[in-house]
Length: 342
Image 1 (cartoon, rainbow, N blue to C red):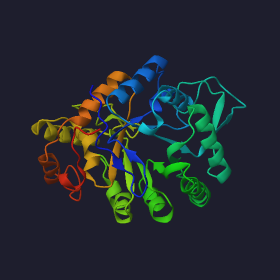
Image 2 (image 1 turned 180 degrees about the vertical axis):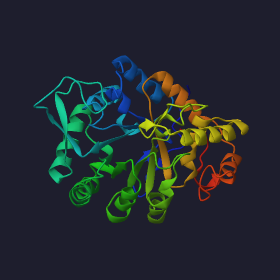
Image 3 (image 1 turned 90 degrees about the vertical axis):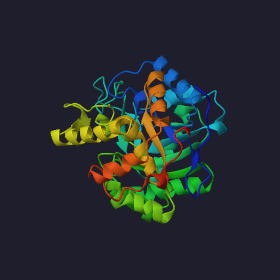
């Protein structure tokens, strides 16, 4: 793979720039199954060689394992050449009643447990612990992690604490990451957030973010990072099958049928469903990055190739015409970037 670092896009009103494709490190924390240490290291190496320079992690991912592994893999890289984001809101504390294995989807020992905390002190403790695990002296981006049930403390304590750190130059950009879009819009409108991480709400199967967070970002001149673009797997194959997942649950038959109809239109335009799923968020001008989970070097290679594929402009028009995506999805020229730019 050739080195490519062109095509970075700035988080508006900050000095932080992201490559168009990001490396999601949740799987380095043994999400759903064990990721061998050598695979984790090789995946980060392959991402670097491909020109990816944005890496996202969180304490939640494997009770700190993802941060440990990512920090180790990046330790010998020039610090000014890459961007790291992590998250706050779940402190890792000793588990008084371990059962042997984590109960939240990660195959790791549960000697630690997660404790919700969006207080100022909790934010500072979380960031200090992340820096220690990763061996870093600073984080480029910090998100509030899933503050769905904690709006008041997250908005009144956590976000001001992050804003203070940003204003002191300790953090480059701040925001929130969630699986819903309406509260992310509130963070953009009512707090000092620069950027939000939007999971699964602007995809080929769900464009609900057009109702709230994307207009807010456009109006306020703020930025969006898109994750969960495969909606837990239903959009990840050329031809979706029964039994595939949609938003962590078994996909209902009507949704599988719709995904297949989209796949048929993709095929008619000489492309496929996963390529279109990765490209689709870039149709909106506020979305500056798509971040994908990557467990192995082979997954990195596949995702990079998918991301670089040209998507015919007429695909989105046909999907609109056939009622398979919303009519208010912006035209191809609104946010699209060259497919060769990582």
